[in-house]
Image (cartoon, rainbow, N blue to C red; front, top):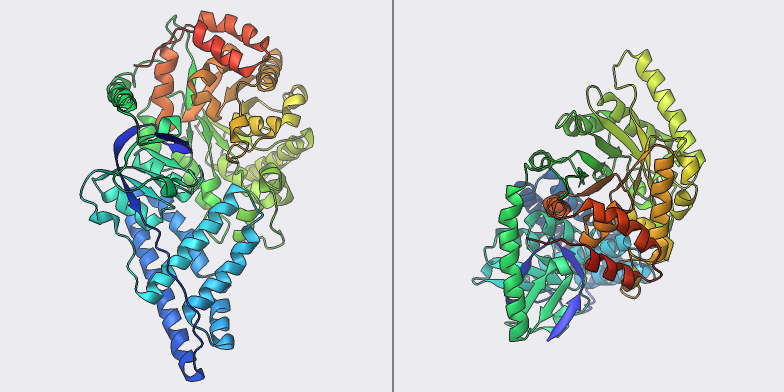
Length: 579
């Protein structure tokens, strides 16, 4: 029995036999061509590009039909790679100048580009590297007329195991009644594979590194995405454990549907504000059906992705108006886009060079203040869409007071422009900031004098505080939400905000973790905001808690010096159950 840990997508358990999707690698040989054949070779290459482009458009139409327009935009990233001068010009130049076959020229040019990625560990660039590899494989398949593995030929329930999955593979998975789960060597929480998997709703574990080398076809396997793990060739006893867990999950789903309309209150009657995080505007119906307390985080990054132009003010107004009018009386917190230099360079800002560490670099409010028209357009669109709604605006990646003061000045200018044009809007839109950088946490008493509310982004705050990249396989085990330093800084933020009469919410993953939610509520956090698909599970968890016990727990955990003791204390002292 082997247990592998990766990145779980969705919460679920699948038990079955493996089906290995073999990598469609093609051995490319160098062929030197006579001069009279060069023109034909270039034509053959261009025909392969055309065929690949047509296939991408077909996949895009299937994605649009199956998963919605925001997911269809992900295919545009592949189309943009296909149009890159590397593919359209450099390869043809090598064919002509060195008189070599198209497959060899493409593979050599791709190798040159991939070498530039070797020392870059940022997740975004790793995903771009994988996308370049995927597209080059597709082109070579069309040059060689080699048919790829076809998932729709599977005719029995299986757990699909692969190195990586193309969007076309994922579409076939979504249509197949036989793929009950999948796991891959590659992938991250932000990869296209993860985004598709979330929408499909089946268990998946990504980023396993070498699972295709460990398993063989028809091997017994358990995929437990909620535990971020796969169990290869489990013992009979382990199989029994997970069969029971799976049955319990099925019962839990039935129960969860029953509590949708019930209030989010603890067992001793304390109302807890529970909101949702939304990544795009195509989940409104599901959001409205949840009976939540509003949207604690509406991410707007999707507006800037996979495109070559800046989203217009009118385009943004339409998106914001759609989301704000869905539940006009409930608070909806729109966060200005937390994008980095890599995204901006794709939409026309060519003066920005690539960063070696975008996570610590030019992103969020830093970038938007360097290009204030981006920020002004976004905030102005929010104001234009704000009338008769309960909209809030939140700024990401704040590190100092000057950033907030500059944002306030831009808002004042926007109001003056709207007054001059006789455009009506909500006058008193609350302005808040994300506290996700230790410097902001340590001066939160100053920050609170300039904002109306704060929201803690625990994902980044913990990473920055502990100097841990949670998707780095070498240190991810050190990502610890219960580290005493994390608990102390959370307590500092919450207690300072309350002294200033301001509310604190948490929109990071800690809010949706059972133990994490207990810690946050025990420290006095006013609201939790969680992913839509986890909302009912968190609600169920809150309804099983006793708030009076939480009040005493906060002081105890702050006096512990070891995170394992904190976890032990929570598990021992809190009485709660998962149905």
